[in-house]
Image (cartoon, rainbow, N blue to C red):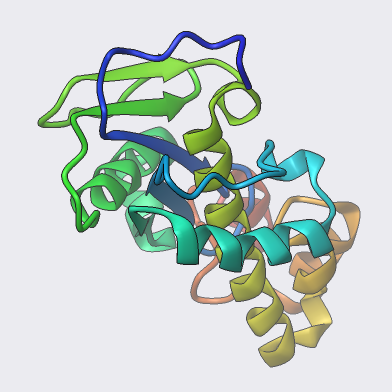
Length: 197
């Protein structure tokens, strides 16, 4: 985490997203301001952590940070705006939802949404910046849990396994059972399943 040079601010929020690639559900973002008095060990890119480790850190992060918030854009908004614009909107919503106003925002990736405070995009930020790592864990666990709930409602799609990504299993289920209301109709595999392409 120490190869990144932090900007000279006290209240820095990290922001990350999960769910740009799936065919269903919301794109979920999180914003986190860490508390320097309560350091959290084990933070890393959520994709590099086991599910068990992510779940454990999820509660530790929520209990020990200065502020956190979840932002999202729905499948309908993704279809309306496109996935990139929807992701930017979801990031704006996460930052706006923070109970403490950050002085500076670090965003995972190569572009920043329009914000009222200065910001910086950090490529591979979820591995380099503790605040972004924490945000990536909150966003991923939040979305994965929603996919597990969806799996309970619609077990024939296998959401607990593929989390909505366009795996062979998911594409086969789409072909057999059709699309649900929260499938992203602007995504090509869903269009194909609905005969819209």
